[in-house]
Amino acid sequence: MDTVRLDTVVRNSHPTQPALFIDFAGIRDTFRRFEIAFPGAHIDYAMKANANPTVCAQIVALGGGLEIASLPELNRALDAGATGERIICSHPIKQPAFLRRMQEVGVYAATVDSIDEVEKVAEHAPGMRVYVRLAVDNTGSVLPLAGKFGVDAATALDLIDRARELGLQPIGVSFHVGSQCLNVSNWVNAIKAGGEVFRAAADRGHQLYFLDIGGGFPAGHYHDESIPTIEAIGVAVMAAVDAYVPSVPGFILALEPGRGLVGESGRLVANVMGKALRGGNQHWLYLDVGVFNGLMETFEGFPPVVTLLADDAEARPQRVYTLAGPSCDSCDVIARDMTLPEIRVGDRLEFYDTGAYTNEYAAAFNGFPIPEIIMLNLDVNAFHTVAATHHDASDTRAVALSA
Image (cartoon, rainbow, N blue to C red; front, side):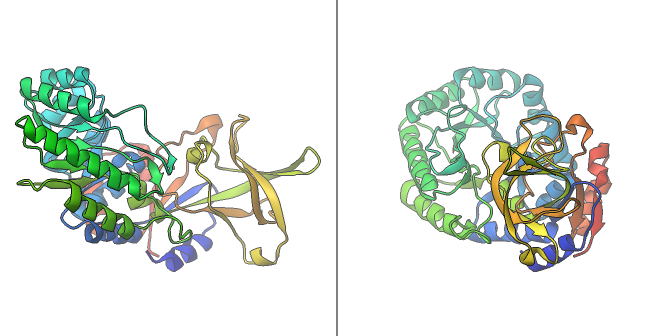
């Protein structure tokens, strides 16, 4: 990704409300990196990261698939040009109407992780392909996802058996190593566990061929070398697949990058709307974007990477700040103990790696707007795909620029 060009465009902009810059050249470059690092794999973008219609259409235009969790996401995936064969559903709990619609449009497969879900899928989408979500170690991820979903190997085998009994097509297993995973060995250990399920299932007469290694791919290596690269994860994953997964006809390796595919493409620009000195020595800054209208991930524990957009930033003295959002809610605190150049009212701050989970989480709480989307380096074909379909007003607030 050409961060220099992106930096120049962002620095020269002066939005009057929060603005989220999405660099589509960055998305295209990152997609190609995934293709090279995971040769032959199905890249099924996790739409929950950023379901902007043009983002989804861009990924489909590149040959990617889409991973969905709900009926609205399915409709948006179809609008983006994806066919059912290139859509999977990795949400272990699904509504009956959603299941019926997935079957109608030919969604390739859906995950299960309970007997109740297997029986529900069999009732509302008879004959559907299913894969079982395994519970795996999330140690080393910034936001662990363990506990809510996933089963052990023994339970997975029972679910595979039950799916076959009910006329479903059990095809494999999936897992998730946790969001922004910094521990490459999590993928290796999970793949080993998946391979053991493949072998045990074969002993029961099943022919599994689908291994979905989920998401968790981190963003930010370009500014923090301790964060694993796509390439480093790819080397470990491909070696683990060769070592631990039995060779089977028609084997499919699937991955669901969300943040790892679009996170680095985004830069969020916020305006400083106020300052205050609290408790005698605590410097507070109040921005026009906070945890409710764009930066919810900071509330979940993701440390923001922030810079001051000012020509004299390096000449200003350093201060320690608490960054807060614009709302009246006392929970609207973005970060504490942030060292930045001295900030003035009217200054602009830039938040890095905000291409994922920014507007998806955002709501105009207290009347403060969610970030305007400003799209850079658009793919014309992807843009025309979106223009040909109808979307709600929130999708039409994008402005197309060229970096």
